[in-house]
Each structure stands twice: as structure tokens, then as C-alpha cells.
Image (tube, rainbow, N blue to C red):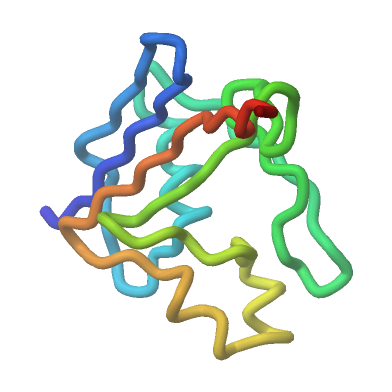
Length: 120
């Protein structure tokens, strides 16, 4: 079976890992996050969407994408995730954005809470 993996780093010494998220052709970052909801210990994924279906206000385990202090940053392997995570609806409006949202078998998605820079 082909899989992708996911690590959630809360930047407080705690992490949650999902090593065997089932992969299929055209699996997106958002779909992989949602698949982790069904794998113990689970992941709570919540979001709203824009008029064109792009993800807004992504929250992982109750922690919003943009919150103080810090925000979630997402990477696939060593590349930053696209600025806009897409949904099936958004790909209807912007089909060219689908490829940058897709993951390949064996990819690792990494979500980390990143603190804002401290003022000097």
C-alpha cells in the first residue's frame, strides 16, 4: 500500500505523527490532513472556505492557522506548502493550483507552530 506521512509539531515539545496515511492519485495536502482525522489518535481539522473554495482559517487540533503567538507553517518534504490550500471546489475555479497542492506516495507533510520574530 502506498502512503504519505504527517507530523504535527506544536512547538512546545509535543508532536503527533501519522505514518501510514493511505495515498491515492491526486491526493492533496488538505485531503491528507483530513484522512488523519480517522487514524488514532486522530487530528481535528477545521476550516472555512473562500468564495472560490480555497481554505481559510485552518485549525489543527483546535489551534487556528493564525493565532498569537505564532501560526502554522506547512511543508511537503523540504518545500513550503502553497500559500493557498485548495479544496475540490477551488480546483474547479483554479485547476492550475491542483498540482502544487498534491502529494506523492512517500511524501512527508510537516505542520509546525512557528512563533513570530521577537522585536529587537
